[in-house]
Image 1 (cartoon, rainbow, N blue to C red):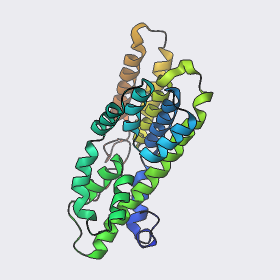
Image 2 (spheres, rainbow, N blue to C red):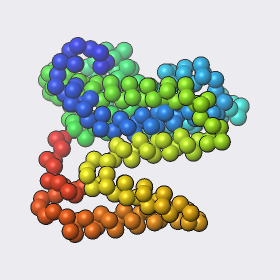
Image 3 (tube, rainbow, N blue to C red):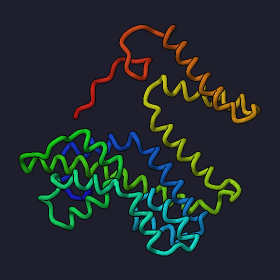
Length: 255
């Protein structure tokens, strides 16, 4: 889909790529975690690579791999993956009017490449199907731009996780992979100066209070970040601010 020249020529393609790039860190961290999880759960690197390339669904992979490792019947594995990915049935039903003019093979490819965030961005922007062929192509170009970046970031990070799985000490377990995912999600949410500052304060406080029992350092980190940001809000520069603070109100997103 995204390699078609007639889609890449529209500015919506570049716009879709740019918007998807804003959440690439979270997608890449999740893909890295999935790659590590498949190998640490018992799949060979070849099996993990093939599963990454063929399935292209992190939640289904994480649901199926433990069952496969435990020797569960095939129907149980398929049922688990099916239930986890039922949301894509809803996505497909909503996108159907937007792609029904395309040949079957292109519709199948579009469905395969469309991920959660690609769909969310598309649904937020386009509330009705384009009336003319040009409008429909612009919509396809926008979705294709999202899918291009999402596919590249997921595949690259997941395959990297498969390759690096044996270099990570086994005692770290999947908890380490989860930390990687949370770091990626946190980075993708750092969209303003105030959020970056609050993340830094929380991290520093959590490390400083590491010796506290019952993981109370997490509570200390939250309290420190909230208190510090409230002080900045109260005594920082006055003037128009956006939702993240320390800056002008951004323009509303186009929908």
